[in-house]
Length: 118
Image 1 (spheres, one colour):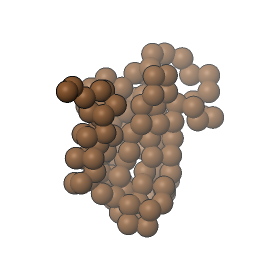
Image 2 (image 1 turned 90 degrees about the horizontal axis):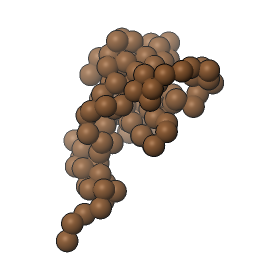
Image 3 (image 1 turned 135 degrees about the vertical axis):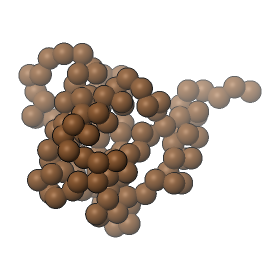
């Protein structure tokens, strides 16, 4: 019996999470992608806390125009800027079961451009 898209993504997500964990010095950059928006968080898995988050719905992103891919790139850059203010330079990338393609890839490239290393 074939898996639904959601079940397939959950399986991939669990497989990724077995390997990728974040610490306070090197947090996990978690990506969630909805149909319209994209969200990114820096997570410390040891203390189970979210260090910071940024999304295409953030106040800083209000009034921006462009495609969803353009906004994803800007979210990556905005997240990297906030991380630099907190002194975070390295992260582990967690694509959340999505393919490293399109908006997820744009977010990662924006974060790298902003100064994050992963």
